[in-house]
Amino acid sequence: MTDQPVELDVLAVYSHPDDAELAAGGTLLKLKHLGHRTGVLDMTRGEMGTRGTREIREGEAHEAGRLLNLDARLNLDQPDGHVWPTEDARRATVRVLRACRPKVVLTAHWDDPHPDHANTCRIVREAARLASMRRYDEEHGQPAIRMPALAHSVYSRLVVASFIVDVSDFVEGKMAAVRAHASQFWSEGSKEPSTRISEQGFLNQVEFRLRYYGSLVGVAAGEGFYVREALNVEDPVALLTRPMNIYS
Ligand SMILES: [Zn+2]
Image: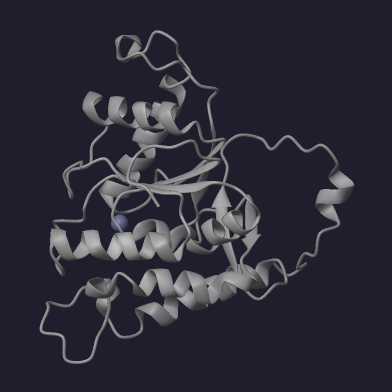
């Protein structure tokens, strides 16, 4: 796993070092298993987090990336808590997209209640479009790319998933990658201040959510994504005869 941009099939862009694991860890493991080249771009080092330090979190992110079999884990070094669609953030994201040339980008949803997450989504949507424009940042010398497809993690019951990835075989792997961010989660006797995600039941809730999305398509575990654009389906028979749950 490199920390430099390399050519990828799928790039997951999230705000903080544990976000990609929580939102799309099972999907990233499955994509790698299917033979795709995968990477994560973290917008920040998570240095404003209530628990852990910048150095501890860097080590955890590296270990989690190794557990997800990523080809690359990159960081844009934007200020944690102050992720904003500035020209600097857009240009830096365009440069990563042009270097990695992903076909698909996974990211947060624009209505996510954490402002860093919502702004990461805005940066990614704008950068994906700008990366396809030849004259944008032309002086940097990278050729424009075909705009990648964008899929947004479903974080709320108010966002209906456009598709659910069956990650039944990757629950253990995802949870191991999540737990690699040990400073963020509950541990016996920790003196660190508590947060929403460091409560004892949080990791159970992550798994219950996987099970819930799996149940919507009749499998053991799933991760849901929303696509804003209409899906272009080649063969509706092949698509619609996949197992489904009529009570979803
Ligand atoms: Zn986050």
